[in-house]
Length: 270
Length: 279
Image (cartoon, rainbow over the protein chains, first blue to last red):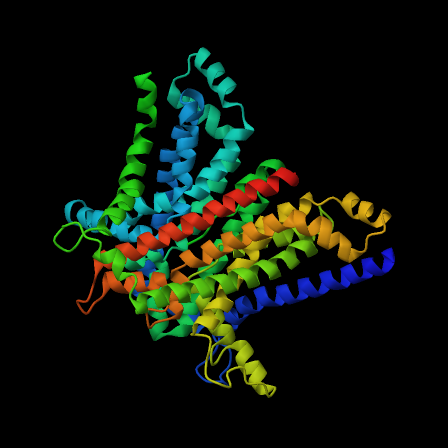
């Protein structure tokens, strides 16, 4: 009886893994296949679509812009979030819940709804500050906040920042020394996680850029796709691989298993 | 004391400006007409048949993709949970789930066009073997195609949220059921089922909210607007033909926020109930 149940279970597991594996891997393989197709069914495999990426100025601009946005957003997120979270833990514990609520709030406001409210603010900023696409990073910081908050919160929970900062302060360190030379080195993997998540979110962002009429990577891919499906699918594969590598680094980066569970708690995407 | 508050000011100023202010603008804008006078016209306009239809469309797609995602995801999670807890397979599946749950938008749509589009890999392969998957026209660009594409990020999300609940189920409970003469049916019906039900229901709600708020995937796939609430919002908001109705777009967006908030609150309640039994 036990034995037959074991066999049934193993058969069930085998089928599930096989079907799911196919469902998730075939579309990725299909993208590769599609991006190396020639002009006709019988044409030999070609990498023209891939080399065309660099011959499409719109795409090159959009890739550059998205990479810049990713870096700016990650840095801005760290500068804004980390000191605040440390400060709240040390000096304003009563505000902990408020900060957590605000950081996770973007989950319950769908991006398409939030962008409607952001539109007038963006218009004002375009007229009075700058028309550059990099202005998007002001809004992207809000979008990545829930992801980064959870990663950083898990990192902060793992170290005793009260003792660390008091020890540093009693030895005469200023607040900047405490932050940069005591706290940051002690939670480097959490900071890496938060940054990689931000980069992945920014590189995949479409809603804000599209509705605020900026041409970032995803908008450009969709736009080029109307003209040349092969090239845009090649960029899509490239950006996907890049995001995969980032997120795989993230999930294999050494960190305590216990903390991992919290940082990986999924959040409603997009 | 006031000096302490100073440390948190930049954060609150930033969040106030870029998160709370837009939300307020959205909420106020839904109750104001073009000239800035208060009105309920935008909110009552949601009752128009063509807008109600978008809500029905969004609800159906979200519900179906959430149910399919929840059932398939739960099976995958169960297959993972019954394996070696420290095995490579589990690590790979959970890592991959983390990656795929974030996957959406333009890239995902292109992946499915390359797979199931009219000249997609699988379409062509099946056609060569005498199977036409589009006997009544191409359904990939219809809501049913969108539902299928949504399951691609719904299943991994389910694995991530449901796996901890499955891990909380102890083998001893099954042994206890068996030693008292219970069958597999008894175990699932009276022990594991009731314990996992809140977690399953809660996860399904999260998946529903996830699909309901998704915009990018639908926007790239379905070019003629109006079948889903997010597409309708963007159409009303950015109409190029001068038909833009920003007030109505804000009212729709506000309704969307309300629905997602309610669903997420229920999810949180069910999560809390789950954690009471399974730790």
